[in-house]
Length: 445
Image (cartoon, rainbow, N blue to C red; front, side, top):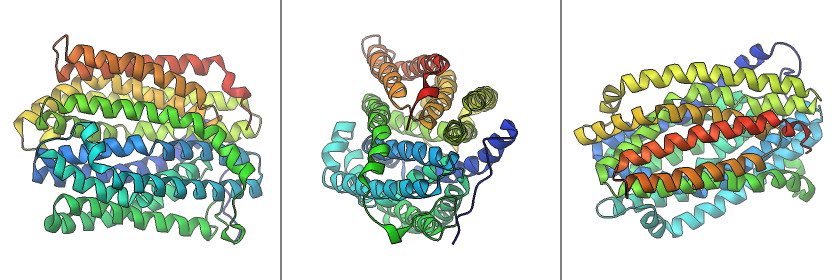
């Protein structure tokens, strides 16, 4: 079957192309993050300890799967460059090699996470009544890590190829399955049922996506007839991936440490932090949708030797992000108590979460802008600069400032929220400065 060719985004209206890509990406992201919200709603019925257990597990998981996040960036940059250059054979080969790498990485990490769940969760701050719940939840999540991670990893790569509808389809199937599976399994099995529902839902989405690629119903295809390891192509992907592992891993590890700091103030505070992250991430999905158009817009326009057009697409996306993100965050700060009350019946959790949302507001806007410039650099194949900036903002600003403000200064959890906001704003400023230098335009793949 002949692959479906995407529209040519190297010519025509930038705003129209960005909007066309943003719509399915945003819907996909809503569907992809809806399980977090849906999971929080159901876990809220089991109390703050269950919410804290799930939050600690996901904190450890995000640190471990930094490799998969980096692979999706590296493969997306390579595939987008070949699609932009109209080199179908190399684009297909890149997809095949990327999928092999993703399966190998997620399988290995899943085995390690299942075996080391208890010590990893203790390091993350789990103790008391939270630890047994977290261990049971984590072992199931890690056992099904291939299903959990292939949906976002393959979806990001296909979005960079100009086919966000693949991610949309995978998340539709995943979300539809979860709507039925979570209440059914959790009512019978508790936290273990919630974890099993997530695995089953993502497994269905993964199978659908692999079927689409194998059948050739996307701009690039997964040609299993030529299944083999191609070391030169894997090398191209890994050259971009390796610095991105540190780029993704450093903030994920920092967030795990900060979660450990938060856990010292009790289950209600930890539950509030978990809810604030889930709610804020869901609220900022439109800005994520905007930023995730940029690997395709930048990568394909660079592949077509149109560097100025690539730069204009980033500028337009950044302005839209400020407008959309500022509006959403303002409304969320205003309605924070009412929103949090949907997920928790614990008055202390709601009060702490409200303060956190209002302190973190400007920081989240900085984070949204950071995603814009990060995605633009990744689309160009430059993952080294974002890695360095991430290290500076997280480990030289956020982590030490969070400890100082929460412990010696005595602001407790409020000091952690303030440190996060400051770090994200500084990070966005540094990313914008680096992008304006223009060295990403000269990156070769």
